[in-house]
Image (cartoon, rainbow, N blue to C red; front, side, top):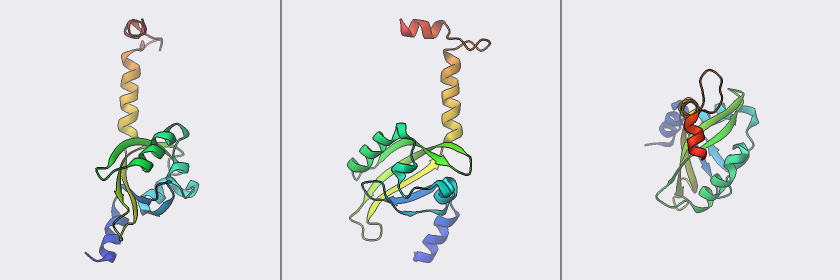
Length: 141
């Protein structure tokens, strides 16, 4: 496959694809990532990531093996004007001269993650008052 074909494919997919170094500095990013993050892009995946998710991301970037590393992180999106959940996979391709970095591929999972968080909240809170219910009390005891 020629490089123009690969570039055309990457330009048309909705998933985010990045090549980063071990420190998280973005060496290359797909148009879908650029569109998601927008002008807020910092040039570093770590800087684009929510502060609470940074330690786990840094550990994954520094220790990712050839088997890959899956996780969810939040990145700021100018397009949506809020944090978006990305489910990412990190694969080490530093020995591949065509990539020469860590390949980070992911997709926007915000709706699914927010629905799961809402279900978790509903399971332990009263729907009318929003107060903790018996299930949460028993769990805490």
